Amino acid sequence: MTLSATGNVRIEHEIGLHARPSVKLTQLAKTFDSRIEFAASPEGPWVDAKSIVKVMGSKTPKGTVLHFRAHGQDAQAAVQALITLVERDFELTS
Amino acid sequence: MTSRNPKIALSNVGIVIVSHSPDVARGAADMVRQMVGDVVPLAWCGGAPGGGLGTNVEAILAAIDQAWSEAGVAILVDLGGAETNSEMAVEMLPHERRARVVICDAPVVEGAVMAGTEASAGSTLDQVRRTAEELRAR
Image: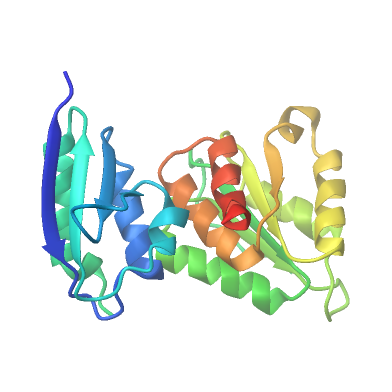
């Protein structure tokens, strides 16, 4: 059975989705089995959240509303966890 | 000059950073540690035995040993001799280890962070190398 989930969250971290936030996001995404993507717009283009090179290459700035979509058994948990990470400023202090 | 790595028996792919400059190698390793965390075996080496810029096979072998993981080791190099000395070091490894060490064709600093991130997720040696080398294809 394949499940799907979507969700969105605004990036408030000062420098946006740059080096350290990108690593955090990718590491978390990789703990889930589901296919996980995000985009700065509901129309895409969609970025593979498990690819550190593509996540960092997206250069997503502060203020962007990140749209997540996931497909797989743990899709719901994956989207929730990623939204929480962004809400917590990627668990970074700077 | 090589780093000390207190972490042992980690199952994630290890990362070795080889630069002509010990400062570059140490700095790149710091970036991996601070961005990726402690879950990846990591070692660096750089500098000539008598000081100054350079790389040498013995230090590279020691770094591979420090970062060793049963999942293998990915080496990031900067220029010329760093690559050829790394190739020599790999050839000098025991036969059973040789097939589990790769030299990535990627920029040393960025490649180390990308490879480290991939390795931290428990990816295979081949996946780690492909992620580091993906930088070149963009």
